[in-house]
Image (tube, rainbow over all chains, first blue to last red):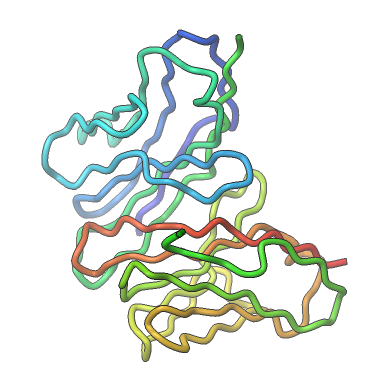
Amino acid sequence: AQSVTQLGSHVSVSEGALVLLRCNYSSSVPPYLFWYVQYPNQGLQLLLKYTSAATLVKGINGFEAEFKKSETSFHLTKPSAHMSDAAEYFCAVSLITGANSKLTFGKGITLSVRP
Amino acid sequence: DADVTQTPRNRITKTGKRIMLECSQTKGHDRMYWYRQDPGLGLRLIYYSFDVKDINKGEISDGYSVSRQAQAKFSLSLESAIPNQTALYFCATSDRLTSGEQYFGPGTRLTVT
């Protein structure tokens, strides 16, 4: 079975600082990995995805994530935080099988951005 | 117009009442899902459907039922609502031909008093 661990529930950074949100996964087969963002009072929006092509994946709003198989990690980064990045972020994993497209989500991390 | 819509957006109901949450999509996807979100617990899968004739239980299906009326419509029912079903409910869709990414509706905030 696959699982996702997002350590900590809250990260606070200053505007302009590096954003690093950690995600580690467990999967018995090569996974697909996703990051979603949830702004207040909205649904989840796909930020980026890893599907076994390039290990460094670029997403929307300046975010990127790097797949590291040896560390079973898929951490999300952004070089310079903006106030509008304040939201909740979810990492998710899916097995690479045609018949199964269920996602398993982490518990989420709330990002706060200080002026 | 939104690709995945949910009605109602907010609902307050009393313990013991039956309630239905509805989801419609215009993305043409064959797969649909219902999740609930609780603070600190992330998203948990209630039910999912890979096509109109395929319904599957997720990890927390007790107390819930679903109906897939058409490819574009997937409704979630609480037969007899209880206070611990107070949560934010999301519908999502995906296409079997993609890598599994799901597209979410705006959510329904349900309060059971």
